[in-house]
Image 1 (tube, rainbow, N blue to C red):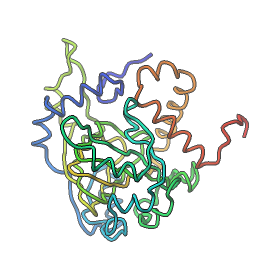
Image 2: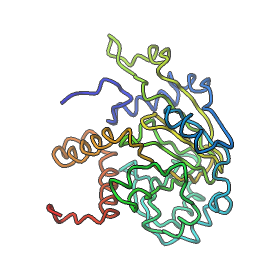
Image 3: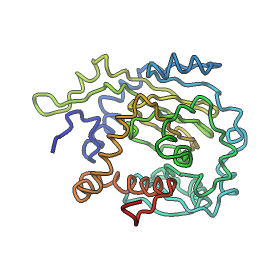
Length: 318
């Protein structure tokens, strides 16, 4: 089996722990604190968005772009508990040892009690709210600048608008990664503040002659393009496909994550989809051992996609 040389692209536990430690108190801590901010804009026209950012694969924060949304004006954790309190969700789904089922109301209550020494921040990740509390969608309007999303041609409308809510406690971390399937990332901040750390898809961290991560070469490379910035309520982030990102919750936070597939990335998208599905099908035991936190998430995503596409998993010849 071919081993990925770029440590940033290896999602085994040891590699992810190594990179996260570098952010916390290692070689990346000082580098990120001195990193420039991403470009921030207001009043960008749809045409300018396409030509300046989407076509050029450049990230941008559109300040106040979704400040008119009912969700930004009215939502709080208590508001969601009132509207969707009995809905079942999985908390800390990215950490198999901590993952557990609860309700939205119970999760909101946990935010109040999960405090003090030794308490680890709790996180409700990838809540596919349209399947379990669809009325929330009216507070999160579709975006004109996202209508290029080619996934609706592949998977149908229901699957392509299956956006995710991210609800987390201050101090929560999403470790450095690239989003799967070569899709553009769009994130609308609704409540609270998140700090994002991003770097170019061309960033590489390789080992030196002694077998150690070559942080010096990494930090000096112009291909890395380290940036950091904060997202506040009403702000909207466009992060092109394959940009690395790490997220830290500076406060309790609610955000909407949505994807968009640019047709120029269609071949890579399909290759990654097939690689993932074939890996789960033909090499399940090994990938479960090497990626114990990721496999349950991928299985859950696949089941939800099948449901949104009305696929009968008991029928091999639909």
